[in-house]
Image (cartoon, rainbow, N blue to C red; front, top):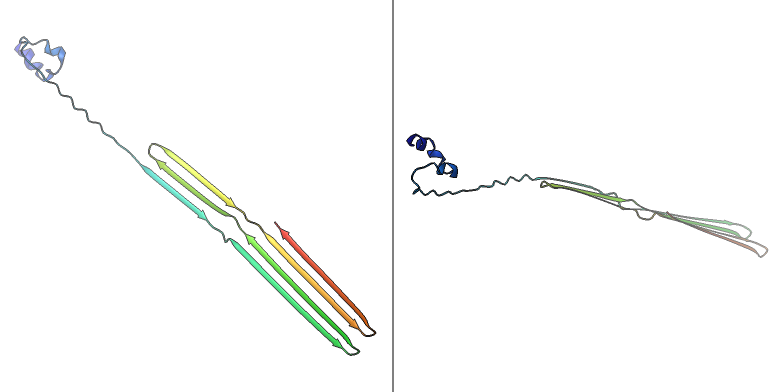
Length: 151
């Protein structure tokens, strides 16, 4: 039995071997310690893409033409032309946000917003012709043209 005790001395913690000893007055205490290792891997990838275009383009063209012709024999011709062109252009705005988080979880969010505003074209044409001749003849011609285009 001495050989068996020396051989199984490192294995005293096993209950199977414990029954092989002759003396039942041995007391064994078992302490088990559990260690848990937590390994976390975080990979954060953020991509922000913002594209901003020029918001408002305003083009204003004002053309004023005045022609005055004075001749003998009491003839007076006055021509006034006024042209006003206003162009307003608004371009879209697109913003894209992509957020990717990997905590053994991957969230991908893509937000695309497109705002398109109004294109307004206003054309005002006013033409006034006044012709005055002798012999008490007076002719007055007035032409007013207004064009408004909205896209």
